[in-house]
Length: 413
Ligand SMILES: *Cc1c(COP(=O)(O)O)cnc(C)c1O
Picture (tube, rainbow, N blue to C red):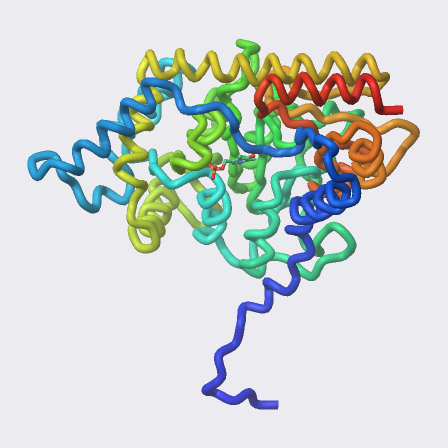
């Protein structure tokens, strides 16, 4: 049947999306409990959002950004879409100092965050490509590819056409490389939600796989600053050969509390290649994409970012990370005492906890809420391999974390 030519049609890939259901459902059940139990305090250990205020250096940087806009001599309007050159130089400096990795300024693209970049990056690759994701994973990788039409329909909690790489207790929550050939491989380390961090050897296997298959790795390093173990890689470029096969996406959100300020960056090396892309091509495609569809990150936010990467800024932010990691330690201790098997939470702000007796994630969510009045995040919401687990976030104000933990000790049966 011929369709009427004047009629607009929607992108019906959106109708395939079966998820996006996790956090609204957590909120719905929490609200229902609260309404039927008025006056009961509820403790939230579920959110992946920062809670401590910005540090003095960052505030000073942001203020400087505002003040510059107030004066005709320092006012700036649109900046370079790729970001302020001073900030890009500082990011390059960070890679050189911290990882001994050489990244050129024009390989760095400043953005308004890692979520948009990790959702948009797929748009510069072929629309018939096959993707592989860790299971469980941050939902953006899968959903952005569903919307782009790179998958079939949903089948239960997975999509046809996606290669899921299970992360479980047996493999230490880091997968082995796919058996088949895929085009894009998403890796997040330190991982949300499992808190697992890949070793250099594990990343090296993926780099070898990608180079042998002319695949591209999309490496999400948003939690890099939570790694305290000096042997664990904070950037994929610490692995030999990664400059030929990996894009790294990063953010000021979790390292500097910029969740509401909005600032991130992506590294697209000029040495990166793909099946039909020689060196420089993918870098120029991302440059074209950003200059066409993005008008640069806020100049105020970028002044804040410059301050965050100064020596003093990094030192101040380390104190905040230490604070969150102390929350993680307090929560872990309690859950272990309660007889749970606890993973993660050592070089990442998330604890990944196994329910007891094979209880389903949502059943445990309800039990925790009913008995201890604590909100956690059901693991099954991040992928099929998350079933039977729950995620606990260390982002919180200490007082609230301590009260939550006390309530778990006293009330969880
Ligand atoms: C929080 C988070 C981000 C950060 O996103 P922004 O858009 O920079 O705030 C990226 N990736 C993962 C896995 C996250 O959990």
